[in-house]
Amino acid sequence: MAARPSTFGNMVLALTVICLVCAGLLGLVQHVTADAIARSDQQKENAAIAAVVPAFDNDPLQERTQVGDAVVFTARSGESAVGYAVKVRTGGFGGPLVMMVGFTPDGTIYNTSVISHAETPGLGAKITDPQIQPRAQVVGKNPATSVIAVRKDRGEIDAITASTITSRAFLKGINLAYDVFRTLNPENNEQQPQ
Image 1 (cartoon, rainbow, N blue to C red):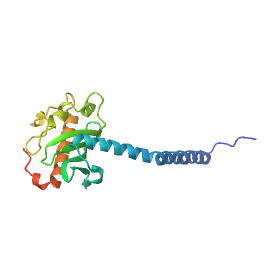
Image 2 (cartoon, rainbow, N blue to C red):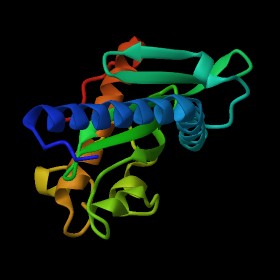
Image 3 (cartoon, rainbow, N blue to C red):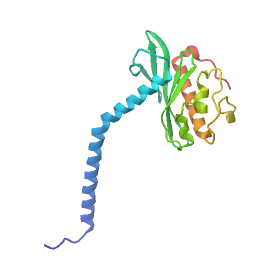
């Protein structure tokens, strides 16, 4: 049996079949792993909420409020709100920086958590360390009475050495989260310092 000569039509047909098979396999893998990915994302979110607000006894995932691109999770002990975890996204040096900022009801920053980032390993990626300058220095500050910006920008916070862009992005995320917090808590609408 003689081999068929290669033609443009044969090549297009072969490539189309290969692409359809690959697309089908990718779709199948996505379908099979979608639940596991969603569970993993929810576990990360739960851990971030627990890390940024005082002890609570409710399920903050059930008390979520969407405010623009941000999501606010209310943490309660009994009937009283003990904290608000605000999930925001800002642009870092390497790409998006997704973080959770926890506020007490009076607007004081309780803690922060970096959920995901694309920062440079060894430099901007240090933002995941809770003891690094910007993260450690914002805890206990209230954006209504403190300038949450790097010192180079006339703020009160030290930047990560050789990673000012990441530090600025992180602090921008804090300020975005505080703006969202203020929209939900009008009694905390004091003017932010200049």
